[in-house]
Image 1 (cartoon, helix red, strand yellow):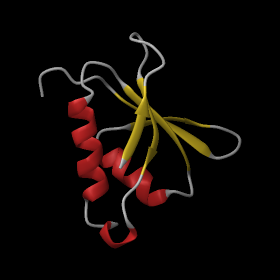
Image 2 (spheres, rainbow, N blue to C red):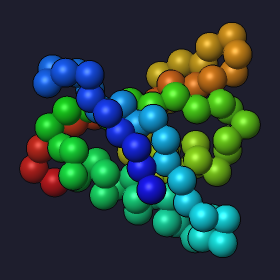
Image 3 (cartoon, rainbow, N blue to C red):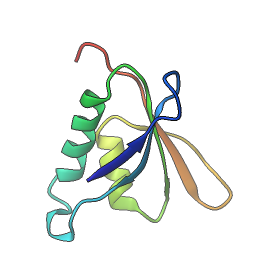
Image 4 (tube, one colour):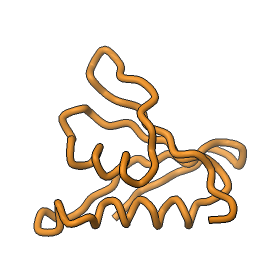
Length: 87
């Protein structure tokens, strides 16, 4: 399950939430979900923020092509995946 929003046509898609059931964690489903999302929302970058404590979700993001941009003072990391056009 993924909740994504886009404030306007020129803005990046913002991933507000994504969830994989506990029984499916560690089997690559998070990575496949995020890769499918990148294909579905191609043409603009995707952005999200997660606490560093969410290591499983961070692993899925990084494997799906997201790069860590920065970590704020509250240990919340920002990630971005570039736009995909012809993949």
